[in-house]
Image (tube, rainbow, N blue to C red; front, side):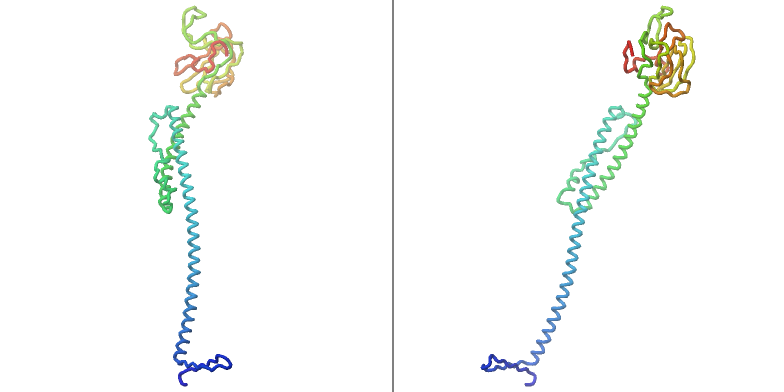
Length: 313
């Protein structure tokens, strides 16, 4: 039949065959639709396969970003905690600094200056934000850290200046302590103290401007503090006399010596041998006449000697 297809169906060997007639147009249309369906299926499969691969890559990248972000958050929070700890240390340093200044009377001195302390824990809301549920706002955390670091930099600079002033003070105090005649210049017995006494030569009441320390002739005389020798000579009253300038307006004088072991201009240290005890000048026996002179005025040496045993050293 023209324009048609005939299909013969045989159910079995003895069954009656059946004839199916299909239009050629229908067969062609079905074939075309089948081919189109197969092509569309292949194209769709390729598209979705590629899309799946791309989405898988994107998911992997997103997971990588999430992991990296999580690590960065942990690092930021760890750094934030370290900043807070450092702030706490700076506050403790400030407290220690104030204690030192009170102890050294520098707190109210003209060199003291106002310090803007108290960074640590000052902004409670921002500190809590480091550990709150709003951790996605890394920018705000970093911004807060930046402000804290600026404040800490200012605080550290001020603290450095303060400690420099304290260091200068303690260096000066160390120098002052080294220049203070705080030990006995020789070993012996104090036979005459500082103050008014009856003169052993005239019997008249007179001012004795030092200490007389009786001891064996040629006993050692040591410098009671650091200083510079400014005089070695002979005087009618003092006999062989030696003087040391310790700075800060303090001078010590040693009279009746038998021999000087240093010369003018020599720098001496506390405990250094400077002379030998003698009986020169206006003296009744071997002894050392020891004076402490502050700003040109004789003062009681006992004010400076730490071990001020009146009888023996």
